[in-house]
Amino acid sequence: SQTIHQWPATLVQPVGSPLSLECTVEGTSNPNLYWYRQAAGRGLQLLFYSVGIGQISSEVPQNLSASRPQDRQFILSSKKLLLSDSGFYLCAWSGFYNEQFFGPGTRLTVL
Amino acid sequence: SQQGEEDPQALSIQEGENATMNCSYKTSINNLQWYRQNSGRGLVHLILIRSNEREKHSGRLRVTLDTSKKSSSLLITASRAADTASYFCATDSGTYKYIFGTGTRLKVLA
Image (cartoon, rainbow over all chains, first blue to last red; front, side, top):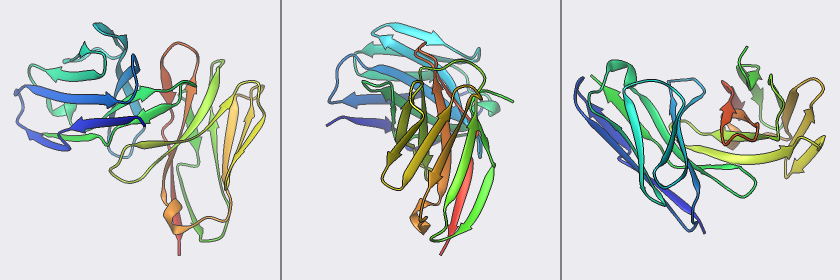
């Protein structure tokens, strides 16, 4: 069966520090991968999606970037965090019928 | 309103009652999906309904889709305290991108 992992689960970072969040998927090959951000009590904002290794589409201009160095690995990064980067970050992959399967999320607090 | 907007924003019912939440969207879609999110957790896929389907059932869940009105509804019958969560609709327009609504927060009182 397929599983999706995200780490870390929680992160507290100072403004201006770098960021690296990792997501890995097991049990499937060549998945479409997604990064979302969710503000407290709000819906999901699509940040990036990838349909293959090295293929990244950005949906929201910001100081975040994404990379897909391996088929089942998706990384969200920033060189310098802003206060507005705080939120709940979710990684997901899409299945045969385009349903999405989400990881447990990373709660990021930027102070 | 934005694509995939749920209504109501919050709903509080007694255990055993039915819960109905609605989703409206703006553009044509391939399918519409409903998800549940427990507090502080990732989203869980509940049900998918294709654009050529009008109704779908899964256990205590019933989803309807009206493409002429660009709306969908999710009915949870005989609700339980464990159904307390936020529910989101998401639309798939066939572009690899999914548009999620703002969610309905459901609280089921025991």
